[in-house]
Structures are given as structure tokens and as C-alpha cells.
Image 1 (tube, rainbow, N blue to C red):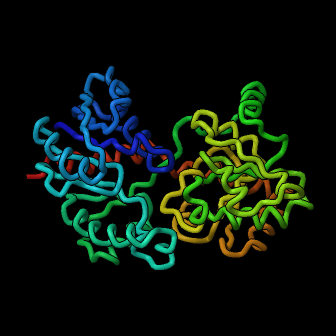
Image 2 (cartoon, one colour):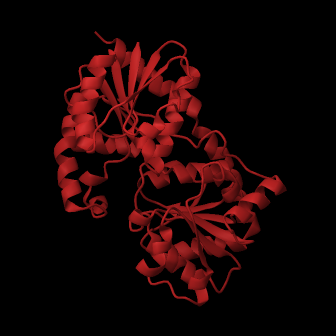
Image 3 (cartoon, rainbow, N blue to C red):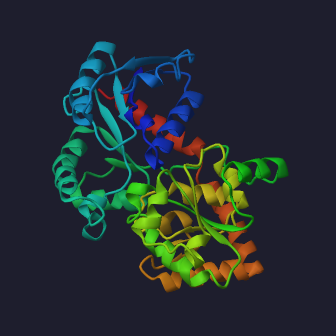
Length: 372
């Protein structure tokens, strides 16, 4: 069959883009039966998979995402004879001429304590259109069990409409011990000798709980030798946004900017601790990445963070900086606990496999595409 894939998320930075790249590469690796028709929004992506014998690439123009999704893509599907359409993000064309499958990355807009991190117009829009997408989609992939349960409850969906398919860290995420690689990456991002790592984004500081991270580090700074490294494009705005002082603990916070995916395993391996007390995540890819690299983790005992980390991390209340600091302090000052959490993370990371995610995704696409 001909499987169409909407790939506008390739142009983004963040977890959905990482997932999109990985699931596409996995499908192409394991599937020798079907043809793939890739639809790009940016001409810069043309040729990205052009040398693959079962891939066709097409540019679909559209300045606005809704027009690209709802007008350009249905026309392209009809023109290219697509049998099933897959969108790794959470929309489907309502007028698609073929069955559709989408992936949902959380139900935050429908949950009051989570919706506070989004604008009112965004919440109203998603609450209006998401039920339509679920009705149109022949099947929906969900990145965590809590996301599946939330949508089943909120939208009263028929059994089996939503299928949980756990994501995974990219295949290159593993412990890096090569001194030359570690030295090169340390120099590239001007990383300190010892540090606590967190990843965030300039526009998502509140959702990622940047203030909780800074407040916890303020409590820790005088007791541990580690500096705080905040990776992410544009995160240097946090220095003003959260009133970090120019001296003392504030001077010990570093912003290396965007860290390339190829370098992240080495950065995780250099870090003494991955601190990620985010307020909400469906499937926190950085948690799975850190576990695969053997980096001990402090994260939140909420939603997908707790589900994915399980007992392989110290779990905290994201709204309690004292508890966050206490957990980080325990890991940084107790070598036995540090080693135990590191080993537990490496073991738990085996649960999250692109082999499994790819196979489960392909099974859904083929089932939907071949249905009468």
C-alpha cells in the first residue's frame, strides 16, 4: 500500500520533532512491503529521504498550518493515490480521501491543572477541534498509558480506538566513555567539569518548571560543587525572566544553547545528575534518553514523568523546591544511591525500544490501510 506521512513537524525543535524523525527512520528500516509518500511543508526537506527506493517526496505549500493540514494535504493525498495517511502530530485532515492515523502527545488542554500552561485561545481551539480529529481518525496512537486513559475518559471513545505505543530514545543514546569524545563535546558547549543538567525551551519555561529548577539549585549551590547547565535554544532569556542574580548561585548557571542530538549522549554522560521536575509531560523523551545513558534522574511524580521513570528515578513534587533540592542533594552526596539509580535507569531504559514502537505503528497503519 501507499502510506502518506505528514511531515511538517520536521521543521520544529522539541520532543514531537524527535519522535517524528525516529519513527520515520524506523518504519523505513523495518518495512519492505509498502511505499511511503512524504509530504513536506518546507522545501528545505526535499531530498532528505530521496535516495530511499520506497520513498516519494512532495512539497505541499501552505503558509498557515490549518490550511496545510485541511486543504493542501487532502488534495495531495488524492493526487498521489495514498491508501492511509499518518500524522506523527495531533491533527488529521477532516476531508482526507483515505483512512487516517494520528499520534497524540498528551491531553493537557482538557485537564484544568494542565491547561493553565496554555493560552485561552489555544485551549478553546483544541477543545473544539480535537474531538473532530478523533472522530475522523481510524486509529489514534498515544505515547503513554496515561494519555490513552485521559482521552478515553474525556472523549468517551470506543474500546481500541487509541493504542499506546511507547516512544524510545534514538538508537545512538547510550553511555559515552570515550575520553576524546567527552572532551570534544565539553569544549564545544563550554561545559563545566561537574554539573547538573536540565533541558528546557525558551517558550516553555513554566511548563518545564524552570523556576522550580532554579529555586532548587539556589538551595543546593552552597552545598555541592556542581554548576547548573540549562540546555535549550534561547534559554538564556531565563536569566532575566526568572531574575537570576549576577553573582552567587546565579553566576553558576550556564546556558549552552541548543544541544545537537548527536552530542546529547555525551552531555548526559558528563552530567552528574539530570534534573527534570517538569509540570507535565506525556512521554518525556529526555527521561528515556538520560536513563539509556546511565545518568541518575530527579523528576516529578506526576503524569507521564512518573509512568516512564518509575522506580528508576527519585520522584518529587514539582511545586516543592525544597523537595526537589533534597532529592538532588541525596543523589549528589550518596555514592551508593547514585550508583543504584544509575543502574536502575539503564535497566528500565530497555523497556523503551524503537523496534517495538516501529512494529506497533506499522501494524496499526497496515490494519487501517487494508480495512474494507
